[in-house]
Image 1 (cartoon, one colour):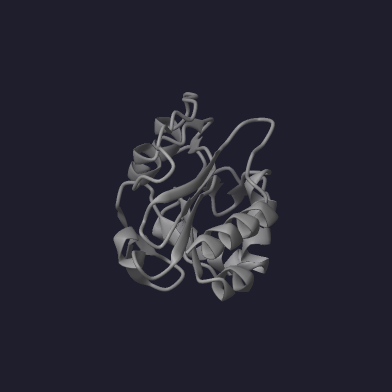
Image 2 (spheres, helix red, strand yellow; image 1 turned 90 degrees about the horizontal axis):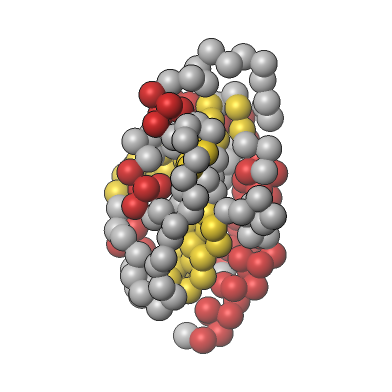
Length: 184
């Protein structure tokens, strides 16, 4: 379900904590490591630690903006659908996509069912990881952003939200991954 007129669960502590606009201020440098984190993967019912992928896979961190299981960001909804549709293309290139949302475990489970997600959906209702990556926030939810980490865990690409360019395209991510694979 893309949107709903049921706003009962929209106004909560997380919404209020993310209400005031804070622009993305991420200053992570290309070629440097990003902060490690551990979050629950609701899709596969397990804990995921970013450092576990080191030496194994390229990782795309896709921070997404979902308000509740009933209210998706109009910019992020089609992006999530496109990532999910193209997930196998990334896996074939040795990539894991970690979709990070601020919804809680219960809401995230409903999102997985609603969108028939194949890719891992990590739940960060405290927004600790969102804040640690300095992606910004506005109107009740953290802002979207994308980061590509190489097999050594070093940042190779980042895209931060702007009103002109909400999310980088799936095609751009695939092209960046191809370049990273060729440089190995």
